[in-house]
Every structure is written in structure tokens, then in C-alpha cells.
Image 1 (tube, rainbow, N blue to C red):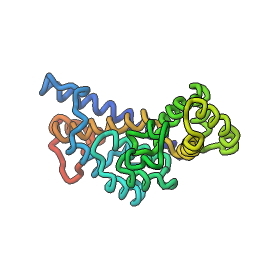
Image 2: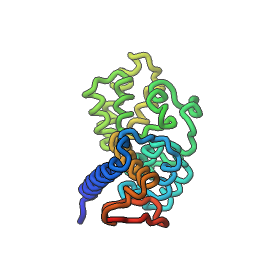
Image 3: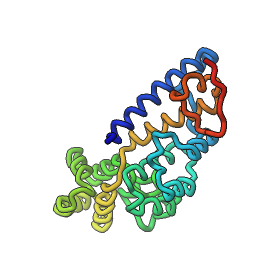
Image 4: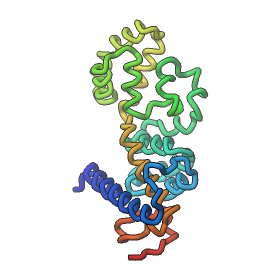
Length: 246
């Protein structure tokens, strides 16, 4: 049986090498070209990534419900693509997070439901915790040390007995730091729930940026990107085959 993590790392390594080789070919034709200067706000490229997900992201689109979520979300930036990736990889679809994310256009729309720390750490994710880093940030803002925040992140959603034992201490610390008791309790419950599905933001963004760069080169430098073996290229539009010259 293939280890999904090892297979993911293998695919990512191949994509990085593929991207570097394509960049070298492009620089021969366009000396000023640099991979690190590619703009990340090209809507056409984002649309290609949404319509034709790369194998690195394809595990997020196995079910029809997951595909429907992406179409309903209609991401307009790489950060929203990363959020979609983070939501589906750990299986947040089963925790009704996807519907909540779609139904919350912005954090401001939920201002009556979330306050204080929870609102502060979820401004960029529509008032919903989807990243592990947000759990750490919220815990630190509540008054926990770095070690205590990491302990909370590690056990949130995995060992409910330990989480219940630590709830009074968390609420007490948060109240001492100027938070309302009700808000502190709500925050702790949200952190426990998020622990079941929260994903690493760095991994999500790394994958999305890699796929975006490949789609960008395939769209704007098809001749240089299309050179090489068929196994070494990713064309986000299967209906269009670029000319390959050895």
C-alpha cells in the first residue's frame, strides 16, 4: 500500500524540479524572467487551477460535494485557494465547516456571533478557524505561553478528556487578560472543534503557490514549458495540447 504522505512528497519534488527546468528554458528566451517575480493575482491563472486541479491538489476534489464547494466558493486569490485546500485535506467537510465558510462572506458578517480573540484571528478566514496556526495565535492572545498553546493545539479535537480538564484553567487565564468569561468559553469550544480538522497554513500555501506557478508558466510560456517529456509537464487545460520540440 502506498503511503499518501510519501507519495505527496514524491509528487511535490517532481513538480519543483519540473518548475526549475522550465524556468531555465524561459530565461534563455527571456533573460529578465524570474520565477520569484510572478504575480499571484492573475485571475485567469486562478481560474485554470480551479477548473483543472493539479494532482497535488486533486485529493481535495475526490467527491462531488468537494468539487461543488470549490465552484460555490469561486476563489479569487491564492489565499482562498489555500483555504479551500486546508478545509478539505483533513476532512472538515464532515464537520460542516465548508457550509459555514461559504455562508460567511466576511468576518464582519458574524460580528454578533464572534468577538474578541476569535474575531481577531479569523479576519482572513471569514470568521472560521481553519489553520493550526490560528489555534496557536488564539491561545497566545488568551494569555497562554508558547508551550501551553502548542499543548492545546496538539490535543484539541483529539483527546476530549484532557481538553475538558484544561478548560477551567484556560478560561481563568483569558478572563485575567481582559476577556469576558462567555467569550473565553466560546473561544475554547471553537478551538477544540477546530482541532479536528485544522490544517497547517504553511503546507497549504506552499502547495497552492507551486501549482499556481506551474499553471502560470503553462498559460503564458507554453512553448518553453511544454518542452520535455510528457511525464514532466502539467498542462491545466487537457483540451489544448502544446507543441513539443525536443
